[in-house]
Amino acid sequence: MDRNLVFPRSIRYLIAVADLQSFTRAAEMLFVSQPTLSQQIKQLEDLLDVQLLDRTGRSVTLTAAGEVYLRYARRALHELEEGKRAIHELQDLSRGSLRLGMTPITDHLVSPLLEYFNSRYPGITVSTQEMPQDSVETEVAEGRLDMGISFSNVLSTEARSHEIQTNILFTETLSLAVGKTHPRAGQADALSIQALEHESLILLNPDFALRRHFDQYCREMSITPHIVMETNSLSVISEVVRLGRLSTILPSTIASHKQGLYPVMLKPEMPRHTVTLICRKDGYKSPACQAFGVLAALWCNHRKDDDRDIEFQETLPAYMTVHKPN
Image 1 (cartoon, one colour):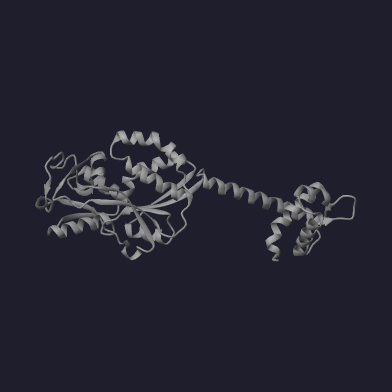
Image 2 (cartoon, helix red, strand yellow):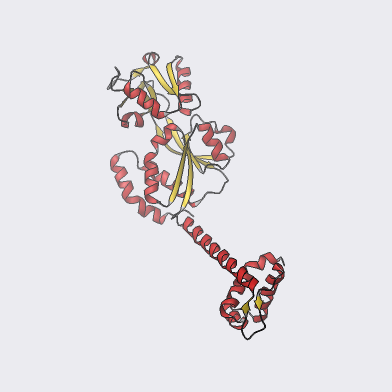
């Protein structure tokens, strides 16, 4: 038998003999025979090539080497016990970590979800990274992110469909967003495609799914948009639009709720944006990862209006107690 397989048992036996100073009492406490106990400790001494116990006196005592080794042995067993407790804490979600990748748009849309998750599981550290959709998919597929939140109707996932799975969270209407000094602020009528062509736009650069979605819409409508500024920052877009004469394309939820922005619907309407949760198909999913998936589904079912959001906050703790991840 490989001695490494019995090594942890030998350490426990050594500690028992050292504490009780007796093979007989240690064997009784451990519910093993004395010959078995002696054999295990002898194997440990042979493995270390040193004598750990002095058996010549009336009681069994540690040798100098035994005293040194036992200090490390106790420390090692303490660390193993700490590791066992840490595993239990992961399982009951009192500790853990979650790595999320999001695009500049989706992180604004799901910020309330992150707040809900933190309020339910304050011991779990959530790390979010903002990046283009292609990068989110790659990082999830290759295991550097646990999950991603992105769009599903302009996916580059076709090549990675065997590596990642998607779960639809909700859909978003897209509209023109303008600032309070823009001539179209407060406009009730939908904006025609011909009028849209003459708008001066600030947009995300083509690395991002929302921009590709808009470019595709323009091609289908046979128009050439007047793009005067590009950026990779939604904050820059929002601030420039809020303060000036430029407009942009945003999910209606953001355009309606972000201070200083006003949505203007388009005619014909842009195809809706489907926001999805993505994860690896066959990879290990931690308890924190599983819990976030459950919570995301619940949150999306209750995000339609403020009243249901209040109901969600009240019912979520009870639901999650019953439906803990496996």
